[in-house]
Image (tube, rainbow, N blue to C red):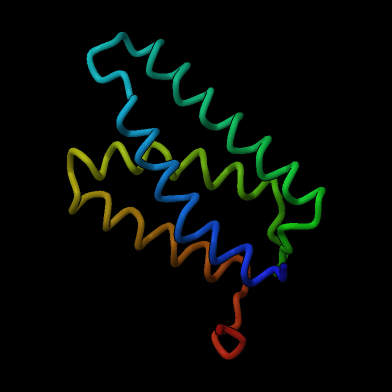
Length: 114
C-alpha cells in the first residue's frame, strides 16, 4: 500500500473512531487529576501508535514535521475536542489560529497540495 492510501485510511477511519472513543469515555464529573490522567493516557497511546507506524514506514513526514510534532499536536488536539463539545465557536477560532500558525511555521507550499 502506498503512503497516500495509508493517510486516507487514517484520516477517514482512524481519527474519527479515536475521537468518538476519546469523547465517549471522557470522565466529565471526575476530579481534575483523573481527567488529566485520562488525557495523558490518550496522548501516550497516540504517540506510541504513531511512532510504531512511522518506524514501519506507514507514515512519511515532510517540511520538518516528525513524530514529536505529531505528539505535540495531539496534546492540543485532544483538549480542543473537549472545548469544541462545550464551546464550538471558541474552538473554531482557536483551531483557525493554530492551523494558520502550523501552516506558516512549516512553510507548507500551497502549490504542492493534492
